[in-house]
Length: 190
Image 1 (cartoon, rainbow, N blue to C red):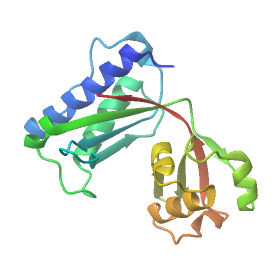
Image 2: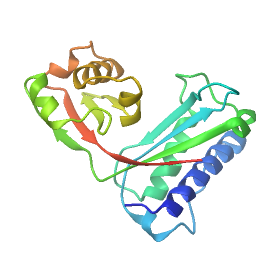
Image 3: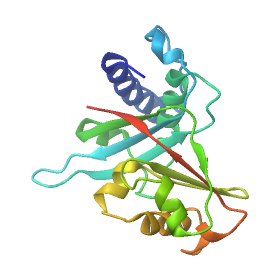
Image 4: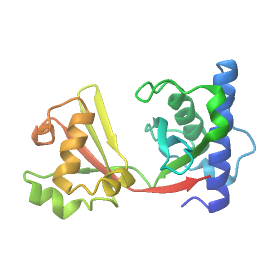
């Protein structure tokens, strides 16, 4: 479990990494970070544009899901990866003052979920609490827990959308060679 103060450190660090990368096209290794960020883990960084009188609009997202480096280093890599996220148009340095950062720290390793029917998956996965990852060959898709909750998707709808995000058809989750994992995160926001 990451402390709130360490989580706020990660949010500030993600912003600083993105700023440095957009300004100088380089990334520095995190230094002098809280000891609990030495824990190995995966991190997702999301960047939202603050719009007056409206909901936030996602501008970039990046992840480090290797689970082989410290949370501090994984956060830096996820922030750098968000700089290259083209799904929402390339984020620019001048946008950063009107953005907010959300850092999702995985609560342990994702666990593989196996089932043959949607009923099997429904017994294991709680939509909105659990996020999902699908891997098939070289393709990987991820759905964060809050996205499932926000869209009010059932477990089946979440698996269908995860399949599409992985580059498969909506029934891709039924393919025996598709591996599905569930996970939970701690979320830290500005």
